[in-house]
Length: 435
Image (cartoon, rainbow, N blue to C red; front, side, top):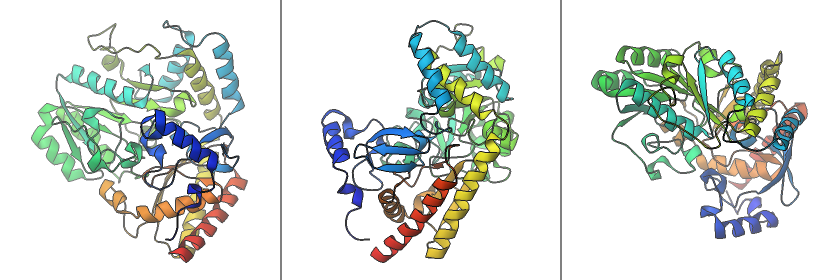
């Protein structure tokens, strides 16, 4: 590979915006992956987005496969969601008091997920995770946690151990926040799970997992693995927490648990249920959720939780995704893109593994299997960085980290698939000639 990627040179407005941001914001960004540390160069500053496209400060347009890392399942500036947000905003942004909108969205969530009888709204996936852990500890009277390397559940101390580097924006070895109460296991490793529960079962309050990890790329669970997690937690009297902040209402109308027909004790939600507004949620059986204050003895509160603008955006989004055939059409688009990319890499002689679940696509430049964090991390980050920058130059905006997913929205269509395929073909050719 030769020279600096073009985005380091020919986006002067973004470059200057980044320089100014670094004067006032740590690293110039408010979430580490945005800094382009894994791909080189400076971040692209986005000015606006419409449908499947975003436009940067320099006026360049890109097909967007980041989709705000998942929430924008309808694409940018969807008219129904925008109308709902503006209508809600004219009535007030926040009250610190209950609104009917909270109940409306809660009803939509509980009707979609068999395992959720009640739900509590918060402001982020991280807040949902830390609140669910506190609830699990209160319900079980235990402190121990089990998580999996590469599964990211937000910047909670007990859950940052071996966090997915895509979400953290760092190699996991440099992430601080390990906790002696947390056991970190390799994903898709049944024996490690069995051994941990044999040794620590009586101490474990909860096992938390992304049922389809999306923060080490997209890594599907092997057959029977999630079923094993349900079995061992039930036997140990521990709670099973599914982190569906990404997969909820994205891989299907009932998330990953609907695909695999498994009921966790607590489910974390976010992203899609806020339609692009800040939101998180955790829900489960009534007997568990009723332990929360003011009804129960586990305290959790939030000034802006359930704010009416986020609730309106979420309800409008869920109204759209509940239309007949929505997820079938979304899957067709994602399948077409995954197949096209696989063909391009095969033609170029690039070793690549592509995983797809619903509208989530994981791309790994490797010859081997990818079933856990170590194998995902071993895939070629250098090749991804080159591919990312070549695609960016050709108007395709992928996540600036090999440990993130490609997100498909309902706004992506045949035009976007064709343009992406051609850009990928040209990018492979350009990168191969430069190497």
